[in-house]
Length: 415
View 1 (cartoon, rainbow, N blue to C red):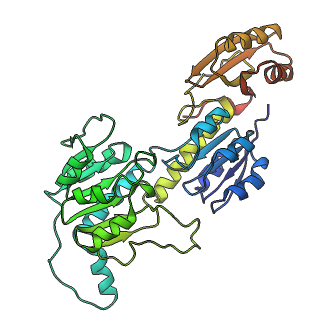
View 2 (cartoon, rainbow, N blue to C red; view 1 turned 180 degrees about the vertical axis):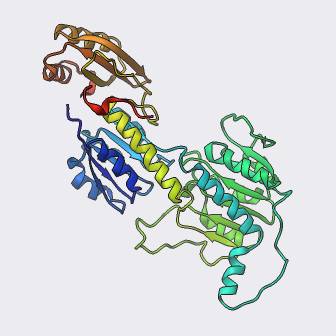
View 3 (cartoon, one colour; view 1 turned 45 degrees about the vertical axis):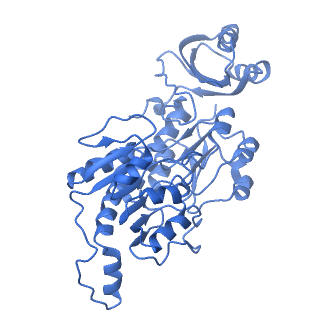
């Protein structure tokens, strides 16, 4: 019945998340750096909820040992740093922020395409060194050039709109059929896109299918003198192969924001085979790192936490059945139950509620192939502890249960 949970936020998550959660009565500890699995193992028992960004990894052994965790929040777009299936099987929803930094990443892609086409970083560095290299050689307008977008999701489609506004021809490739925006045109295969594009920009998640999806065979398909941008995930590009194609002049430049191995903190040394190469922009995973985006991400995931902790809503969870139930005016208690997706579980739970004197005034059940998640509003239940005990002892299909009191000023749902 606890409504005041302890929440650990890592990796310098925007303080607005801490503020919003504390306003709802939760206890929040904010840390600047990522933590290793062993470091997390030492302290996770103290917390009910965990918030991370992209550097902290939550793998199966950690999830199996810390089954008490109620929820995990990825304060970013990607969720590959969490073993999502294992979290689901433990009844732990994982939330992320798929929309909040879209514009920031898209704007950075636009800036880097222009910078690459004009050799701006090299010219700036030379000027800092006292060298005056005033030449048009190797510098081009982006107007009329073709950009190929790999992954036409939230970010890829935004990139499409912005670059078309600059007069670029936009083509895209996605494994899922997507509705083109503006004059963008889909192509049938990745190689079709690579062969046609002056600029290739990647916006795909980290999956087994996307690992090293741009390696030597794909780089050979790219036009001589073209450019590659990766602001998605570090293991999508074989950076050793990319370095070779930049050195031999097949590619005219690259902009890379994510890497197969990244420092855990700003104090660690960054090493890459792409360092020191001509017309190569290297940035420390900052595509979504604007003040506006980080605040928006903090708000988005914090609100998901609040809705889940206070009401049981799993809307927005990437690994969990999507359930929401508006609180009933009659109900004083809300039961949240995760169980194995087997026949008869819900009927048995409802029967037990009735035997204990409770009346169900609202109910939602959503299932996937492995689990079911139900939200049940109950009136007239005197002994909530007995219900909790029954669910834990008498139902082997039950993975976890939680009771929430629907009283007080914090029960109105967030907008």
